[in-house]
Image 1 (cartoon, rainbow, N blue to C red):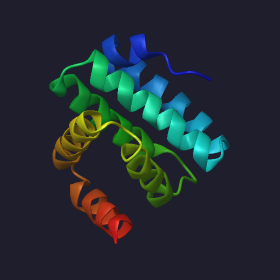
Image 2: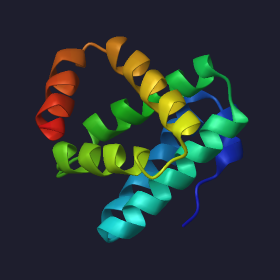
Image 3: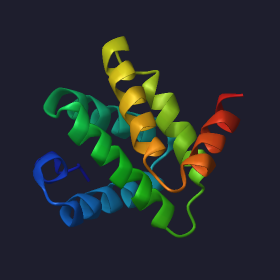
Image 4: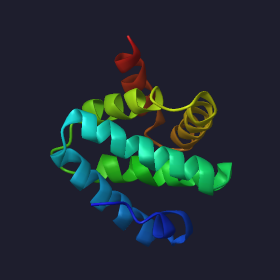
Length: 122
C-alpha cells in the first residue's frame, strides 16, 4: 500500500489520521528494511511538499496515531523511524529531526516519548 500524500499533506486532521493509521498498520506487516524504506519515502515527501508548521503537525498526528494503536511496540517503531532518518540526505534528516522534536515537545506525552528516544539512542 502506498501512502496518499495528498490527503496527508492537505487533508483535515481526521483524514490525515486515517492515512497515518493505514500507513502504520501496513508498516507493521513489513520486514525491517521495507519499514525503513516506507518511512524514508514518507519523510522525503513531507520535506519536499510541506512547510515546517504543517510537517510538525503531521508528526504530532503521527505520534498520536502510534500511541493509539493496540499491540504496537512503540520503541521498535521509533527505532525504525530514527534509523530511517539516517538513510536521508543531511538536509532532509535535519528538517525531520527538528520537526519531529517540535511535535513531541507539544504533546502531553512528551516526557515518555523523549525518554523512549533517549533509550533508543544509547
